[in-house]
Length: 433
Image (cartoon, rainbow, N blue to C red):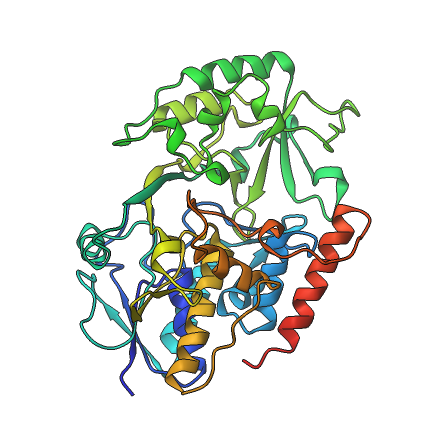
């Protein structure tokens, strides 16, 4: 059997490669690292997490928690590696990003049916099955070839940003404390409080800080789920206090009261030696990041091991171009997976690679498709991406709004979401995979 070519060894590409190989389909995985890197990548490992180290909520009352649980139960490589290298983060699934990526790389390189070809894809193979999982930072050469595939499609993009990382030993714990919001779970976050006066000074400097030049960038072009903190700050004095700096559920043990504002730090590696600033995606110039963020009392002497960066992400007008299996309409031998399809988020990217590969394997084996229903998170995401009635298509995280309602009344939002999750997992349990 001719191997399926997969372009890109990110979360979607690795998940797709694994699912195909596990079903007996040989794979040729093309990856341009380490000989060529994108602006957002730092290591040679596959499945590298370039922004946060959090895969978000692990609770079934949250749609991404449901999506993760569906993938776990269906044998996802990405969830297996994430669960094996998790770090404490309250109700979220966060990972040691380096150990996680190393584990993904080892599994991919160790599979007997996966061949890794280290090369930059400058075009699409002319024959055979192809999954393009090149990510939102697809190289210019490949982007040009993809554009030729869709000559009548509009070009879509948005801007994404990453948060800085600091060392734990440089955090002034005399000005901070460990806790999780509302004391849920274990005290996993470092909380850095600001008084109203400190917040006002910080907010003023943040709004006026000098930004790094990003060609073509305007505030309106950011993705809402990963908005630079300075863009959010410019929306109003109190905006941050209802966003990444909200103090709700966090009582300072020194005063017994909620501070005016709180910056949270989340562990970024298993050793607890590096922490990231939660919600502090930014594209300020690096000296400005150090100057402004050091105004936070607990970070006055912070050692930054990575500054925040911004980059332009590219995605397809998928509702007009792809079907529910992420295949190109009219050219079904070519599939797309990952953020380039318009799914937003680590888990969503892995889910698209999973579904794409499962359905491709069944087609190659002469079996009928699974047709993941919209009642499942995996299916709802694919049906949203391929929904031709969506006119103003934007990248989106999984959410319960794209999953059909229960058809009966359940009191309380959390209870209703839990019932939606139970229904989805019952469906998953009955699927023939």
